[in-house]
Length: 244
Image 1 (cartoon, helix red, strand yellow):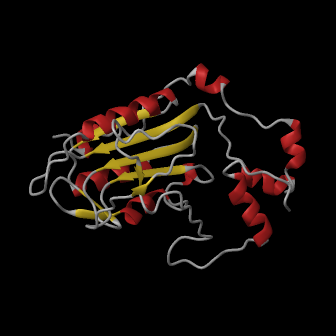
Image 2 (tube, rainbow, N blue to C red; image 1 turned 180 degrees about the vertical axis):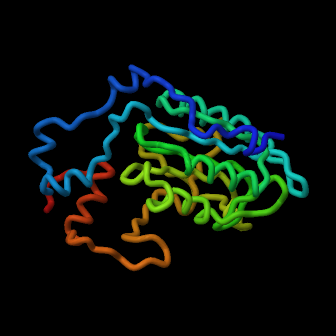
Image 3 (cartoon, rainbow, N blue to C red; image 1 turned 120 degrees about the vertical axis):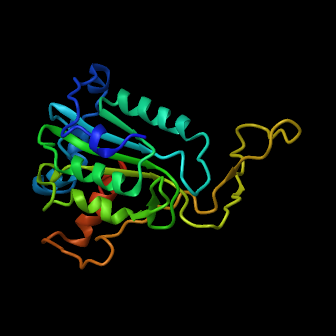
């Protein structure tokens, strides 16, 4: 069993950027800049600097074998697919398998104490059992996801201030089963009920919820109007129409 103490380097191994990835980076043209209605100061907030020497660390914690819980068969396939994708995106990928709760916490804490000054961002992926707000270690003990992300708050991980910190949690969030709803055809192809089962989609699919602050915290306006805040959120998804 791999533990945080003997598996986690103080800093991820540096990896040269993938030239294909860099060449395909999308840069806004002059027309888009003209359509951007926010000021230069706000436009700086709109865009992250993704031109650091390194893309950044990507930590994968893949828990399959548990002491008193069901084995997560097939999770190695997900972990492999995730690593392949992150490798293509030029991340420095570090994998950990079957970590207890304490080892997960130690892994996250140690990475947060590394120097990420030359990195664009950070990715943390946890594949495990879990509940609504927690993920489980292989010893059956759970840890709150928010307590893990707190290690990367600006006052604890200054080298990642102003940089994206992405967390992907692959686990259950309750006991209820979602059987989904039928996915209606757009008319581009005829349904073949004799040979293909009808496609279904989760009942809560295609819903995006933005909050202006994290749970339990008051809103810090910082002089940005609600109009500009809405613009920033739309721009994040490429919706840069001149609506301000």
